[in-house]
Image (tube, one colour):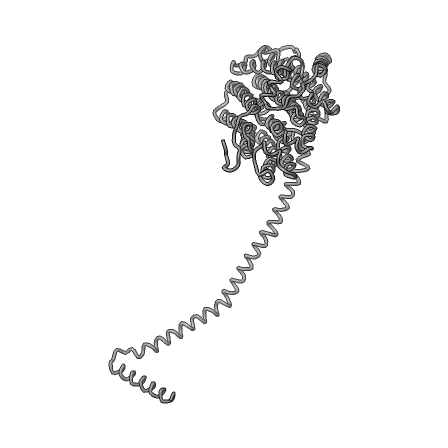
Length: 545
């Protein structure tokens, strides 16, 4: 379908969007079933459905206009869902921080649309790579900024920490198949444009690698399960962004799909414990996985998959991405270091949930909350098959991306051994180093507040004072001047004008009175007047000659 006459585009389903739609539908069904078990009302489900519909529009849009529509509605719904409990002031503030941060980055998408109209004369996503310079670079810059903001990559990562104030089902959907994944999806979709610029692909690759490494350290430092999972989302999305920049599109998409299953599973398990135990602090969750078999086993599968332990899903998909980045030893080293951090923070969560503690009996969990965990755990375990050689070729053909060589056996072995050793070491030592500098998410929110927010408010206050005292003051002064002139005119000029008008009136009345005097109604008087007038005319004629 075409949305704007004369501007080709609209909605369409190809291999990539079909994969994202299936992922979205599966995760949405699981999350809504879980939320039904928690007793949410119609407003919640309406917002969640709008949220998912906006993501569906985003992934099927073939032009920037419809992409922007889905992008914007998704941002608005995330605000409403994070601040769902609107009576809690902190949650509303967190929703505002998340919304304003992503909105600031979204300006890049608006700019990209404007540059596309000016330079490419087309809004179609597959036409952008063919635009000339400098428009191609400007379009790419706008899209990259917008995608990094939406996917909570550096330096925008902090908004995802504030988003943890929302309900757990919202976190499960937001982190897996909707908003945070949307940025990675967009970068995968526009990879030809990134490659055509000669710089954007490299920038995106290193932005993803840096986020995977640094936010991995942030996840390791967290003492709250939801905060740990949020930071790990930034890090795992970093792998997808790395793949989008490096051209590992099949691996990046497979990682997106597998991560959606893993992360929605882990957030739903965290939601169960938050509802039953009333806490998400890791030290208070010790032994929680032992108190309910289904929830504990599901969380164990999800955490081991997140760690990259063979043969679970993220082990394979992550290696697919790293194989695509194998041309750069530095990039490969950063990726492997980020993989080790993934295993470490996942092991930290595992240790907290499975550590045996005295006391604390089993608890009951409604069937509606248990049921979605089982298929998600199964998907988290087996989706790594998407990266195995026979399946990977068919996977790439489905996505319509070029065939590429997958990771070698040494890569699988190396990453698998590193993950298993890291998890084993954490479980054996039972003590995990927590980098203090990463505990508060690198103080990014404070830095943005100091560098952007406060100067912006100071400038706004200065401009407001300038407006009040100069612009508005000039208007008020002009009004007072006009009033003074009007008063002066009223006292002096208008008085004289009025007197002149009154004199003219009096003269007219006098002339009228004189004119009325001959009108006596007596015939003899009219004859006498006519005789006088005739005599005057005769005299005038004689004198005129």
